[in-house]
Length: 118
Image (cartoon, rainbow, N blue to C red; front, side, top):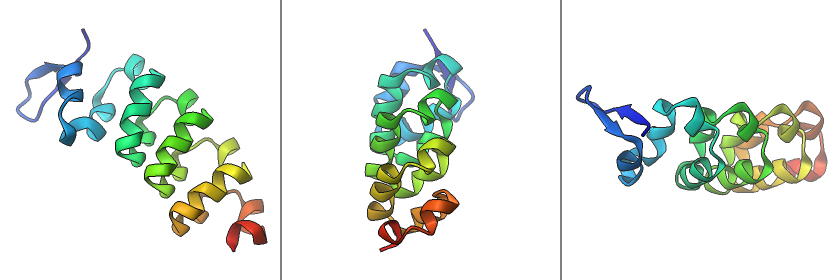
């Protein structure tokens, strides 16, 4: 069983932390690499808090399904997506429509694209 340290310094089972809404988005920060690479767990967390994408494994930050789930919640989570997805016009359009500030995380080419900016 994977464990995580709580605020009092005690270790708790990861699954128990995952059931608490407050900790749902923060849990990934302290989780093992195995948990950070688990697509089902990461998807559940980024649906609740898109910015938690920054704690996902490199592979999942390059996974379009995971990134789109994060973007639906918070367009600015594009910041934590892979360079390839930051250059993907469909992904960037969705991020910018959700939060215009997400444009700052798009590739230079897409920041100069009229369709993306408008």
